Amino acid sequence: MGAVRIVTNKPGNPPKAVNYAEIDKQGRIPYAGEKGPAPAPMSDGMGKKVARGMGAAKRGGSYIGC
Image (cartoon, rainbow, N blue to C red; front, top):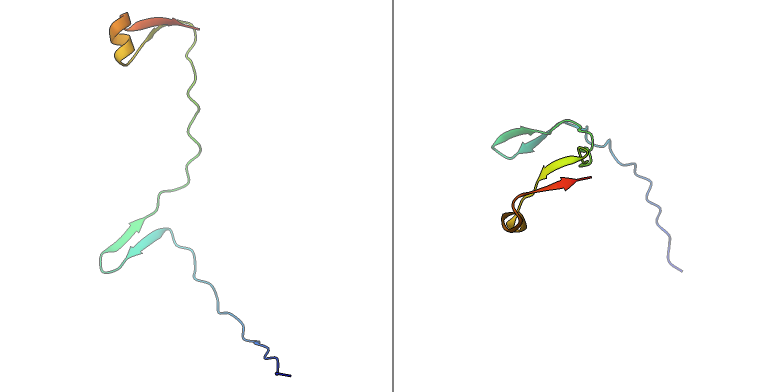
């Protein structure tokens, strides 16, 4: 039978986290900070709304929303 070789070397330390991207021979670009999720589009209630697009051009451009 063949011998079993056991590798016991330990990996080195991982690289430290940075807040920029290093571009070779061009400099650094900072990353944007954390941002929350964008708010969901919501209706602003009842009333007359402005329609957009080709259908709006055919129908007059506004409607009553609910």
